[in-house]
Image (cartoon, rainbow, N blue to C red; front, side, top):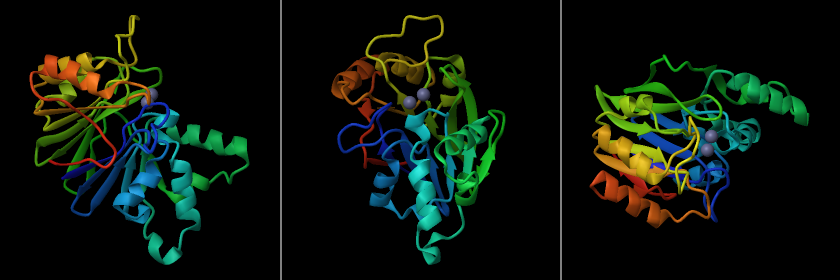
Length: 253
Ligand SMILES: [Zn+2]
Ligand SMILES: [Zn+2]
């Protein structure tokens, strides 16, 4: 399985970068995990958007789904002979209604997304089978319902993506033994609330260590965050070298 980072920013893209977006390729499956601002542009550096077979959105924050709009235009107006089958779009619970609300407010056809994609909603209890890959989910603490995703193959957990969320046992359980743990590190200092909705690089590393993952990759940085400092802090906690996600980087899992 090949993972390519298409977007590693949170909230707003860094210069030349994009918000949340990760491409996984395994056999005939080309799965786009999140489709945040700028992801469609970076996707085209790797493959034509028409080659994407499945899209999973972790939660309904703009930085994780906003490029579904240009992706929808691509599928609506792109050359018909190259479009192929519409990708399956898996949204979190309530995602369909959220997208319908957006198009209703801007005068776009009500069925814009439904025509561009084969739309479904997943539940965090679901197991999605995409070719050889199995996807499972965990609800993590955030400001809206947010779902971490585990991608496994042949019973081996290859990738766990944290989505956005504060530290949680649910995430640690999902990440157990993962080959690669792609974890958000949106904060420089821990959020002082009873239920934080994001985490620091050190908190991400604590979960990674407790879950005995093989590799930790930090992501979801504000454009002005010091990524090298975050990596150094996480490395000190995790005990092995931690890297930060960079657009265009790929990993064979
Ligand atoms: Zn985010
Ligand atoms: Zn979020």
